Image (cartoon, rainbow, N blue to C red):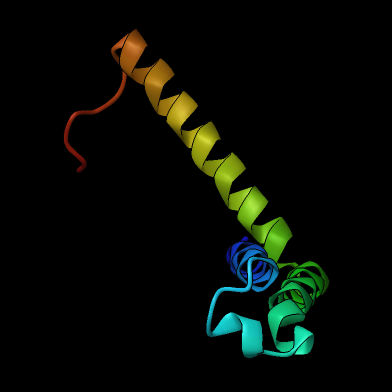
Length: 80
């Protein structure tokens, strides 16, 4: 997401002819978009994205379990 934001900012600066971006080539201005594509490709092929999703789901599940235990009064206040 960071690469997309940087890319959009550079495109706007180039379009509005704001220095120093106006003097840069379009290859440099559009390079953050390519970096974003490469990042997404790497994250998907290595399983990084799936691991992050699984970690978020596990954290939500544990929070829900803790909330239910606390509501029933069975959750221990201090660990052993």
